[in-house]
Amino acid sequence: MKGVKVHTLYDVETQVPAFIHITEAKVNDAKATDSISYESGSYYVFDRAYNDKKRLFKIHMKDSFFVVRAKTNIKSKVLRWKRRLLKNILSDCEIELTGYYSQKAYPERIRMVRYWDEDDQREFIYLTNAKQISALQVAELYKNRWQLELFFKWLKQHLKIKKF
Image 1 (cartoon, rainbow, N blue to C red):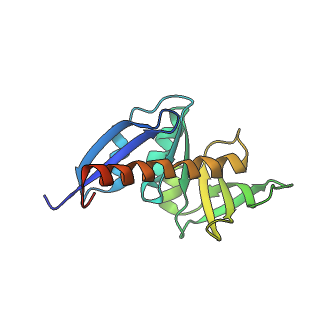
Image 2: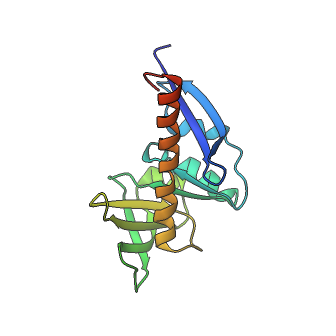
């Protein structure tokens, strides 16, 4: 084995991992989500590497919510725009995926939020099925993902791990 990946479900409230799945480095990241038991009403925040429409639709069908960074090559059609956007929200719209495989894998409407991060001076585009929260809350949920990065940084420092 040439390496491993540690896929982690991190609970931001308790600040500890709730689930860890270790795979060989060559395994596609999104495939690791197949081992998660999704809880109805819970939110799951994923890095762009986990943006797999079929798996996201599975989360949606379990009455769970996801936030994921959109891939740069997303093909979509805007169905409805929200008006009166808050500062840093560039757009908040309901879309349908138009790519053949994407549309087949996720046949329902999905929400796309474009957010300007002043700290990083860059735009982030998120996809979510959470229509009941504000666009700013969508961006904040994704920002909370940083807690996982800090956790791994701490692990590497304290356990003297060279690579993860």
